[in-house]
Image 1: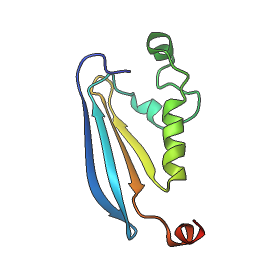
Image 2: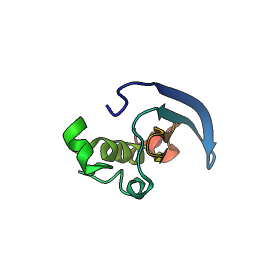
Image 3: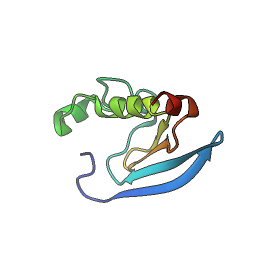
Image 4: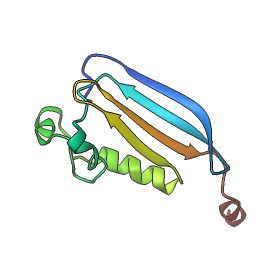
Length: 106
């Protein structure tokens, strides 16, 4: 919603972490970007990178928080890199194999 004109690029790559097979997802946009001072709280609930963005783009500040919670619940990780005016790159990794303990409980 923050990329009015431009592009979104999605990249997927297999990636093993700590002996667990998974997939790295990378979503890159050419949107408005995020200032460095806002990056540390971008995944907090009810937080917008720039409070004035709420009025212009609408939103409650829950989307990235929900994404982070889902990634963590699935055993993954999420991160972001960005600069104002340069867009953003969101990366998340998710395991593709069930943990043996979880698998035995299913």
